[in-house]
Image (cartoon, rainbow, N blue to C red):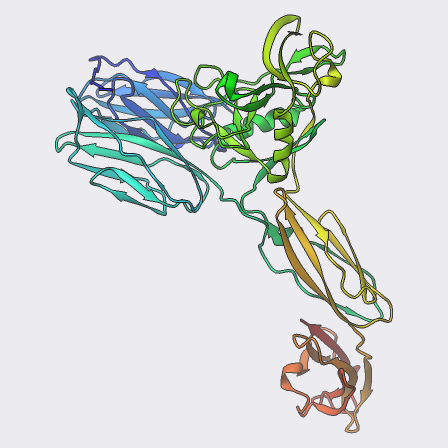
Length: 582
């Protein structure tokens, strides 16, 4: 298709679309691109730093004139595409967050000069995964005659991990971190420059649990004083999961991992419904198949049953701005919407096959994938998809509505599904614990007993028992991937006996185990119990002058260590202690 420039000669700018969210107050990093297409002549982007805005007000100021408001965009917006403007005119733009109590301040006001007789393709978005290579599509440039050529391209705000080809205007590489990136591409014919944004939405790469820091080994002295309780949670993370939800249904549990870094507005939107309890009782009202619908999805969020078991709509929040880019692959979670842009609200769907026809630019602004079902929950989605489906007319809040592809646990006996025949989300929650912990095979239970409650490990030594053992902790993520982590235990009987050496110095006789080799003993002395000095360490060896006697007990040494720096008669109490580390 040929695109020909058609630019009005008066300032008449209107809203086309908007996208994404973060947290704070005044917008920052306002940037303006000028594709100069008849459909999209100006793009304004910014960073959303407000978490309670009702919208964003965009103002424009033609050179030599006053500011005036062009549009108020929806909450969570960060990109506006506009049309209008005169070739060669210079415009300034500024944005502020509108809030119920007090609006934010205005942003800085960048200036742009609209090109003349030269334009570049606009509105492109790309989805990707951390660590996976991707290449941006070449952008078409236009003149008044149609498609044209650029003499060169440039880029700003290119994320790390990518390189830019200035001859064809594309970039390639592998993203280093999840998030939203918006490089600006500029094209020139040698006289005029046209610019546009490309939006990248990057999700985390699949991974299993990993250790953030190593677990310590545990040392006990016999007889034991009591159990040790230790929180495992700070030592582990799941790099591909920062936010997750659970739909408990009458057919099983559906856990989903969300992508707040790539699609923050949609994640926040669904969590709001879940937090209020709006999804408790929600009905799966659609199980579409390609033969009749062109897609295969299972969908929920339209309605539920009230206390009298009548159908009632889920009360919807304001619609959410589109955040398309990620692909509608099997098992992904996406926002259902009407034929209009930015029209998603309470309804979500799970892709039961690769619905690639839902990817890319769409007349309704595109479909936003903002999460995925965990590996262990995929069978539940498949089970719902395999259920009987039919077309039924239900009365929802006293109004009849016909629903096609309505799944039921069995073929309904009546004209509409009965409550017992519905597929329902009995409870929807945001998951607090993204990892779970389980004890693996026990080591020598004659030395210690261990138990796990949530993330807390409790270790209790067995009285009068000494030795070394280990157990495995299994750290499991929501996909069922397990990281085995060994934990070592060492129970020691020091047989600690203080005495005076033959030379009249304070000394101590104790048992020094030979294994494990990582054990280090340190004898310390003090005259006041406050300041301690080292008398001897394992690293100095048993031939050190501080060791005045030694006996080989087979698995251990019996050592006597004296502090020759303290002589008899002592002027006060001399204190001795032994520190054991691993």
